[in-house]
Image (spheres, rainbow, N blue to C red):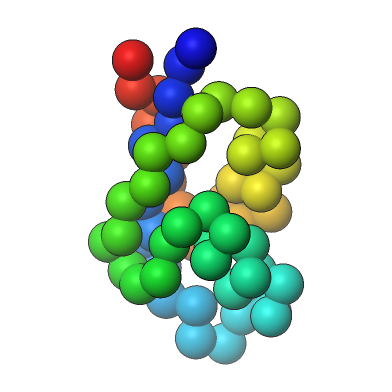
Amino acid sequence: MARLKITQTRSVIGTKQNHRDTLRTLGLKRVRDVAVREDRPEVRGMVHAVRHLVTVEEVD
């Protein structure tokens, strides 16, 4: 199964609480943190919600 490398690129200062919670759920705490997750619809949905704060790469 494919994996996604998710990197937090922007700060959460001034963002909505649910965006901060979503980043925490993905395993990101601060700028330049990296999390590798399975490519699943649930993860894709979370990434879509915070797409302005993260970058995503596919990893094999």
